[in-house]
Image (cartoon, rainbow, N blue to C red):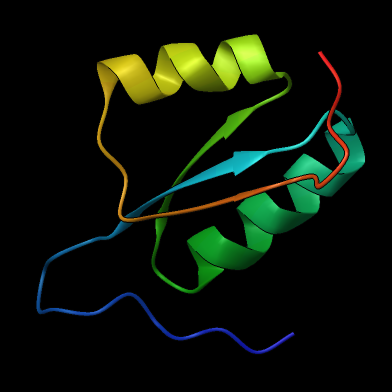
Length: 68
């Protein structure tokens, strides 16, 4: 899986990963944080909505068939 490094000198892009599978979230969190992103995660649509209401993110990704 190829991803770009977070851009900007000293600037860390924030990403939100949404998936109901703990292992999948952990893999993405490890992968993206290793690439220089500040990674936040949510296990449900409700949790994602709460994170989005409280924060801004530069990028995001979710499980396509996530059911709350």
